[in-house]
Length: 316
Image (cartoon, rainbow, N blue to C red; front, side, top):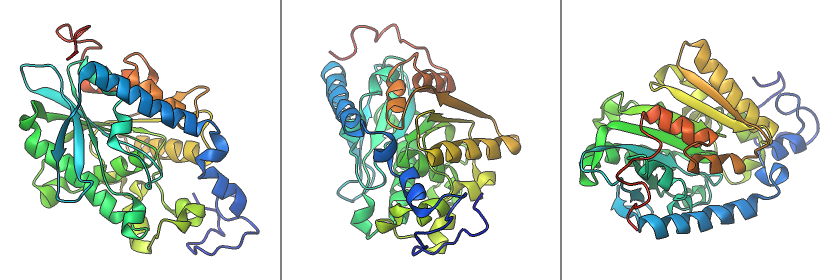
């Protein structure tokens, strides 16, 4: 919860407590991954290299448009299955201002070999919309709705759609969970069967007070709409919430607070903590069927670790 002297002003004094007893410099650092993850660049490059190696083994993903915008496309790594297979939709991170689907294909093999489709949407960056995050939230929602309406186009089972996200992608995935799907997209309220949220943000007030407000433009309305902590009653599926012990203090707190708040409502939640992992290192465990995130996601989907018909021969 914010300290008594927290304010929504984006011009808060650099001196004194701004949020949770932190001064401005400390709060800014708590939302700056480069401070707590000095190997960020190396890991992001490793994501890209690992994704390319996965494509060499599985083949190029299918590419579908979910809208008319230039970036409104998604990569689909299809399962080798003769029957409709479950779908894992992954929303990548990048502080809302970077990241491409092609760099986040590295977990695909975990899901494809377990008999599931792996879907990674592309979407705009916040600078494309003069700092407004609302159009990006709309794109994420439309991508999910497209998968439900068109799952049969790639052999997906629209009744077994699961959602995951990392960092700002976990934030956007959580925002998507607050959607009134039947009214907005003619999609069932329970279309998303489970969600895995890794290292996300769920309350935008401290983010608005931090240095991220130099490139994200918040209004009171968008702050409220983009804060899943204020819409807990709208979240339907079982959750896994995860973070690493080497994350920034605010990213650890955001995850723990969200999990605690959902648990207090009696909602099914598993809180996973990755020992000795920073904000980026934890995501690599999604690419391992026995890793912290990979095992949790496969358990949510109730699929096998390795599909016999695919093992050792996946679209080589």
